[in-house]
Length: 184
Ligand SMILES: CC(C)(COP(=O)(O)OP(=O)(O)OC[C@H]1O[C@@H](n2cnc3c(N)ncnc32)[C@H](O)[C@@H]1OP(=O)(O)O)[C@@H](O)C(=O)NCCC(=O)NCCS
Image 1: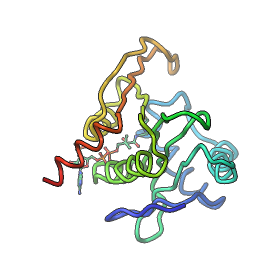
Image 2: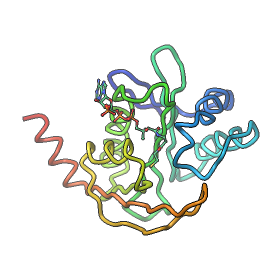
Image 3: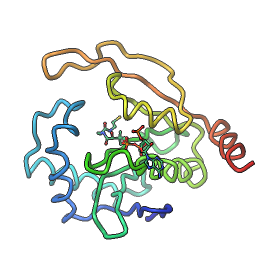
């Protein structure tokens, strides 16, 4: 499977992509809102392998794709993940190499993934979970039209403290309404 946007290609992961992922997942800006202190080669290899294994699922529930620049550099990943076959909701998840932040790439990739979710997978609802201090990610979710639906107080503990999680959601009709508005 592959999706194209104006500036990006979203393609299936390949085993050799682990090097690009390893490089950015050890950036302290990336690690800030994860429990990980650092990322080892085996851990990153199995992280990438998980996405490769998803490609073999039949029927397929999870679509986590590499975000690739025109020069073939892998700069992150984005995906939509259903938990079970017969449900009409799924979770959106993404990450970008910090050297590529603030270029609008995550927003561009996420718009394509939402279109795939609502039009091809025919989902009714997409949700996302985000650390309440992760302002870049919260800004992205709100730019996509997602609404904050809840706050899971002190849901996680890592790096010496508890962290709240925010839950965001977007319904198909809300997504369609925004498309119509942006085209008019
Ligand atoms: C969350 C994350 C993907 C957001 O990345 P991002 O680059 O800030 O997101 P966007 O693609 O929405 O880019 C928005 C920025 O690009 C700027 N921009 C520049 N050119 C642009 C263009 N052509 N189109 C749109 N925006 C553009 C916007 O003005 C905005 O700037 P700002 O951040 O200074 O306000 C990134 O912070 C990340 O990978 N974090 C670590 C992993 C993580 O937290 N994942 C999410 C877990 S819930």
